[in-house]
Length: 496
Image (cartoon, rainbow, N blue to C red; front, side, top):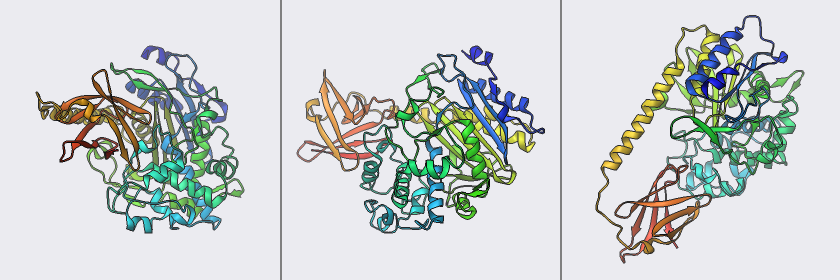
């Protein structure tokens, strides 16, 4: 398959992307091809802008690994968390309009909003929502493949206890961005996606952006997602379904239109002769709000970075002495990276159709080095080594956990005693049933068999939930009354 992919590279370089005379497009082509080969990525779209010029706009590879349709500059990709900057730019516009301020209490615009801590609930502002400092950790399973509307997801998040003290630590939290988008809707008097289209997309002549899967399916030129199979090679992955327009992550766009978006973000808030947002409030979204600690995996990955912080929908850091503003996005089968060097007015977007790959990071660094004239470094090899180290450490942790398994144990009660409905205020109901002599765990769109580990601890075999431990707790009468679910969920359910 690798030779098949390379046989059709490169694909399209459209006249509208005529490069500046000092840009070596052959070198960029080579850099992209090397990254695709190193990471076995089926398809990539890249756009590079500098000021008002589009230096590079090209599709490489295929939209789907089992097809021949090429990735083009107009191929539609889900942006996932790169959607968040549309929300904060909309907020900046509403601040200009006098309809909100960055430090408005959230409930001024969203009366139903709450947090599960009295101090945070009283003082939380719009700014807190969009720089990830409410004290609430990710809880991604509240929104990921969720049956709930954005409004209901926000309501449920308010029923969770905080994991860190309010405003003390940056914890990535997408549902808070959903709340910010609902505040935009309230202040603007119209749906979030309608405001984005009218105030941002149409003035910038950005034509491809859509917000729901229903609209994505009307587009022929769209990327298909892929993931690695058990042998480590790409295979098709079903697309993530966006039933609702979500301010935290449902925008889809092409490389061509992301070039326009990056040019706008690199500017002063105007487009042509028309001002869309003040330079001050657009700049506020690019201003550090919360420190991101460089440690562990992130420190190993960013060897040319000394400081990193989060703005409002953007990560701010240094790279080889240059200021960089960037953000990544990941959703089923797709990864996206947007990167800007404001002082050089350079913006880069890399979109690819392989799940959880770090190719985007490696390729972006190699492209930055080209424009900086930096000494050549094999970022593909470096990032792959860091990823492997991280994976090896995770595997070692699993091995140590398995070593602690106590064999020749059995559950405290007969399996039928564990059957029932278990409730949590935010997460709702988990059903535990007994089917063919085995316990089966079901919640929303997730579920699978429970394999006995030891005593009253089981392993939930659900790949997406990453096979968490499920521990049942008995009361003093020997009845099963609590179910602790580890992993991303990390909460306790009480038996009804």
